[in-house]
Image 1 (cartoon, rainbow, N blue to C red):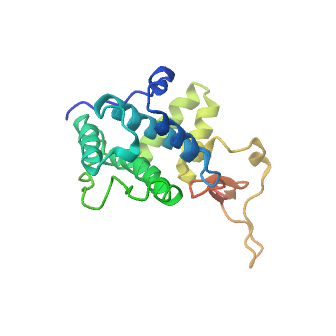
Image 2: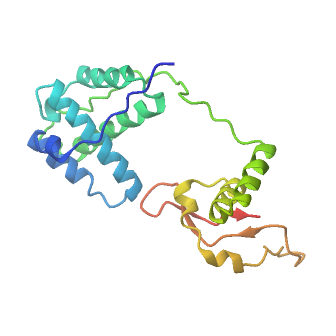
Image 3: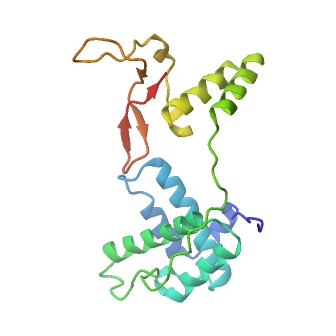
Length: 219
């Protein structure tokens, strides 16, 4: 398998060299309040990487001057670095979202502008770069026993909670210590306690700044 060549983050010096309108519209786009902080961080990285590529490969043109062929060239550039299809699609979608923002809010100033990622530009074929293999019960037990021997109690708690709940890292770090005082979940009909606990509300992946607020299960 070919080596993946990740895109480096854009430095302040590189960003200062980007065309003025591209910098201005990026800042304005990132000030949208309905987007979550995590989404904004990812968008900022993806858009800045795109405009750095535009500076280096398209004469530092304004996004208004770019054409679908430039969008295809950028996509081919990403694919040539052996990025996964999901990574390429995300970087493509950040640019497409910015174009949609310009189409909606700058229609009077730029009535002829159209999203450079139109339907004729095919998405990259789906390909898993790294196949995910979940731990077996035996592997999990061995890992937990090894960590217990080393008295890595915080790591034991993290792994077991992640395994039980299926949560993401960004969700696991929101867990409060107070959960150790919680009682097991009670059945509303029978009044009997079930064999698991529920956490306090945790912000999980979802649209908007608030995301999807849920209570997670733990043993």
